[in-house]
Image (tube, rainbow, N blue to C red; front, side, top):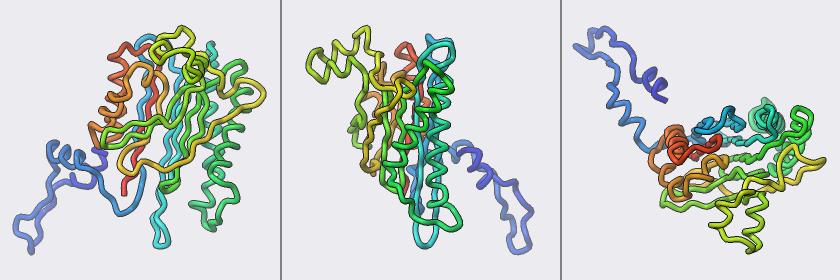
Length: 301
């Protein structure tokens, strides 16, 4: 953003013409740039702005988390349609199988979704797709599952992926990465539920939330991509937050930073990338026991 603003506003001074006595352009100061960047973004073209951060944490030797972020917008007379595809994955399996699994999953799912939607959205002869967004995401997850099984035998990963068209939101989810809706008024809501054995025990009332937080088997999952012959994906459909953000993250963030601290940091700046950096810093300040993946997405109208 800052480099873009410098290109637009920071042109070199030019010689004044005869009709303008001493008029010349000049680069904006760092203070002026920060003032512009710090303003709440507004646009007549609806579009998604997204920031992301990926960090190894404080106690791991390699990074098994991965993320993907794709934003697009088509602004034409007949329609103005923002589009976005975002996902995080947290690998598991050891011997590099975890990082191979997470990368393979995101490449496979991203390729499937974009190939299905590119022509209907951006092609020269667009026609409505015959499949719903939900069906596209479900089929894409199954394709990713098969590719992970081939590329990383014995490995697997969590997956939390969001497909957004206009204000319509579809989330595909397996494992214990999470999607949150964060409003500017301070409300934060988990849109996904963890597919972990400990979370299931908590849902059944057999243990308390405080017991779940320190349970020695809290990372054991009963759903994950690349595990088993078939995959059961949970799908959430809804609307993008109108006055807030969509957050996708691995348990390296939510496992050590409280929800209210997450929303406070997410709302502390209008720059999603900077907010993600601050969220990573908070997780590392809390010990950083795991890899950290964070995506923060906002719809600007």
